[in-house]
Image 1 (tube, rainbow, N blue to C red):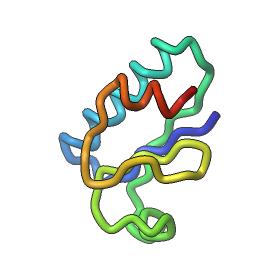
Image 2 (cartoon, rainbow, N blue to C red):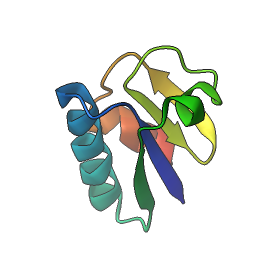
Image 3 (cartoon, rainbow, N blue to C red):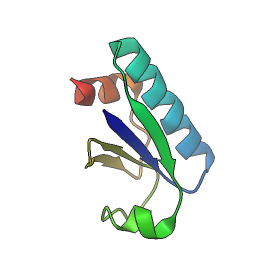
Image 4 (cartoon, helix red, strand yellow):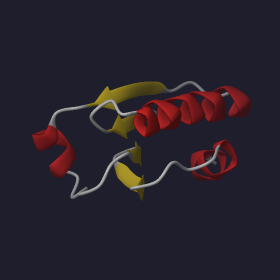
Length: 76
């Protein structure tokens, strides 16, 4: 499973990365979590506000930091 954190590296982006990592660990899944900081790559997803979370190529959240539990639901 591929999870991408879209953002420029702000504190909210870092928190989203931490929440995603914790959700993956909690679910006992194997996942590659990457940070996407290039604005052209971010906009290619149609995302205009960051941070954003992409799971399996689908944007699940943008402009907010979802909780660990919310991310866990999307991982199921």
